[in-house]
Amino acid sequence: MSAVSSSSPSDRFSLPDAGGHFGRYGGVFVPETLMTALQELGDVYAAARQDPEFQRELRHHLKEFAGRPTELYFAERLTEYAGGAKIYLKREDLLHTGAHKINNALAQALLARRMGKKRIIAETGAGQHGVATAAVCAKFGLECVVYMGAVDMERQALNVFRMRLMGAEVRGVEAGQKTLKEAINEAMRDWVTNVRSTHYILGSALGAHPYPMMVRDFHRVIGQEVREQILAREQRLPDEMVACVGGGSNAIGFFFEFLDEPSVRLVGVEAGGRGIKRGEHAARFEGGKLGVLQGSKTYILQNPDGQIELTHSVSAGLDYAAIGPEHAYYRDRNRVQYAYACDDEVIETFQLCSRLEGIIPALESTHALVHGLKRAKEMRKDQIIVINLSGRGDKDVNQVAKILGVTL
Image (cartoon, one colour):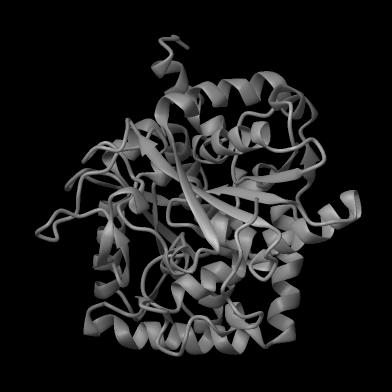
């Protein structure tokens, strides 16, 4: 079964437009005080993406510091368990700091140096983007402040300590739900106040233009490697590709090189939480509607009055009320399909993957594994499914142990 793209072959490269729009999504919805900074960032990035020296330096750091390319791993025992399609895992969990986030953090740190900005701020939910940002700031000698919701700090205490070990200041956010949305709010307040000296390394394909485009481009390396690797292994493209979607950075980078391949089905998996009831999940396409949040127009979980709904997910990185605007665009065009996985399925599959493959996946990535295993069971043995293992689960072990009633 394949989704047929209504996109023209060149469509993906024409997006976003000059105003940062993916169709009716995206754009720039920020205070006037940030417009100059966003324009500067857009101009610097436009020059950097055409600069062979910038690209050479980025490739060097991705290889020497981050550990690219990552492996495309045939999950033999998971394949046997599912009894259907061959399952491959794209091993972003093998990267330095433990997730795909390092791709974007490295690239944006290089842009900050081009702009002469020596103070970096970031937001983080699961902590992986914060850890990646702390690592690159340590590497390049930049001041680093990371905003993190108090709830996320508790469930990701290991990552908080890792950030502090690398010299970052981690500022807890006590407002609202004390999770990712509030962390982004505080980071944006900081940026407004310190815009001349500070660059905001936003961690997902969200926010005001040029961030969704820029973050997507910095993660395209994931899909580029998958294409090369699967052709070398199987001499053909996969039948299906699956990735988890919070803001959507790992997924859009994973999917982008395949958007013009109608034979490849693309599926993003959101957080179903405790079920699709108000305040109990973070599946934006299962109850959200069009709105504006934190710089961008996209699908948002909100009530009839436009107030942002409470969200929930066992995974801090998917616990967010909005989705990246490019995902909304391709969902409208029926090019990317979206599903969700619930907390109980995720905890079960977290243990299953650990036991069968000796790979402990991040709870975020496990959402993709839940759906990928279901699909593999439905597919033929001569078919291929590739699942993006966006991060490793060391950070989640304490939380899962607590859920399972295990005392460490």
